[in-house]
Image 1 (spheres, helix red, strand yellow):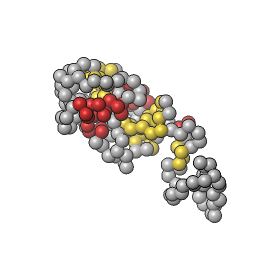
Image 2 (cartoon, helix red, strand yellow):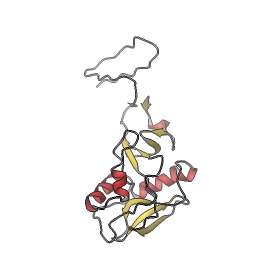
Image 3 (cartoon, rainbow, N blue to C red):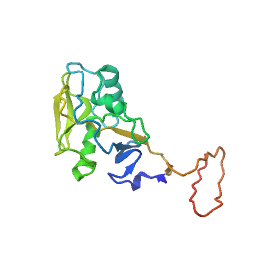
Image 4 (cartoon, rainbow, N blue to C red):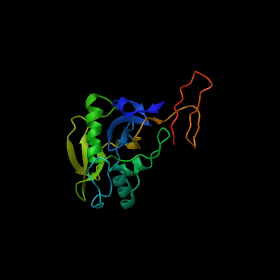
Length: 195
């Protein structure tokens, strides 16, 4: 099987979750279910420096929150520590990433979202962080200590600049020189890349 982002549709199952969107050379994947329905954002009253709102900043935001807030069981730590479907590079999405989750998945009834607010990794102040309401897509600010918000992790993968990327073949082979591999059977499709 090969990855070809031009063939993806929101909600397709791949890379450990649900394909959500592509941006700046990355494919974004949303976990297929909530990781928590009661975790706080954490560290009420503490400003975590460097957090951003934009697409592409969720991984760095998550790392900053985990490093700056030692509290166990917070939304960012739950996402950061998650191992799901063979992947362990999950993060709490930034506000703009989470907005895309609503637009691409929840608004179309995909992803099994509850009609609740979900934490982003973007704070608005020392006491509040942004959420997206998965019932209507509205952005809100809530106290970081609130425990009635949901947590949904995301991950991303690099999309190759040229050609499809092989993600599953049933066999492993690395060509270290230029050349072509010729299949000895016609029951398997082989793809050869010149390295």
